[in-house]
Image (tube, rainbow, N blue to C red):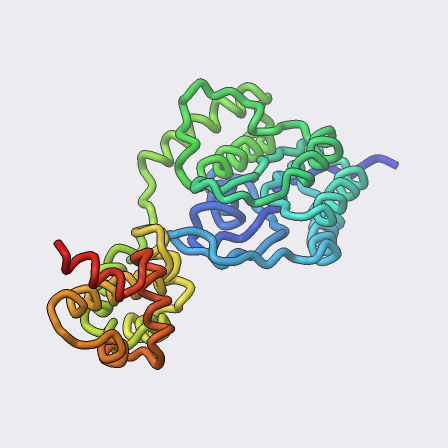
Length: 307
């Protein structure tokens, strides 16, 4: 039976990036700007902002399969572009569907880590992808040498490059010409694009101010998140990026600074100082102090008063 002609559409199978800088959102923008119709199937929903990924929700393989089949049965796009696949079941379904529909071109952008070095798939899955998915792909972007003409460290650039190749192939370009044009497109986008800026630094400074005012009374992260009107999870992203510590540790560090001043500049007992700073027991007070300073409040006072 003669196959019906393919339409100038690209099916992108990818994860969702809420910031729009990568994933399915960037694919749609790239494909549309290059004159082909983007059609989509989502593999993973990320809880993501300009500081990075907070959490993943991988769609079940049967849900992914249903998305792909709905498009391929009806639209029959000429090119399939594959991005983030995070589990074996998803990967096996994609392999099955590629064998079933035989698109003219399959472009695969191996998404293994984020630009910040966070691993997105296991070593075992990477091996299985190499053995089962890669033989079905016509283009694997990690194998293309662009001679330093593209800065891969910019968030989303690899995905845009792959989507651009897919678009040019869909428009009938030969492979080498499609790669050449995709490099030019990415370089132009890097110059012209306006990057989404978050408020991490602003919120971090506000957190430090609040801790300075309230750490002697409040050591609950939720208290500070409520004052800034953000989630505790977002606060954790901020403090890890800015200071490489959790919000709880940051609060404890500031609290211990005040406690050290009381230990050295007053004659209050350890128990009195513990109660002054809101600790219910002297043992909990000593535990927090030791965690930050590496010694007990008593030893700290003794060692530093001798000097």
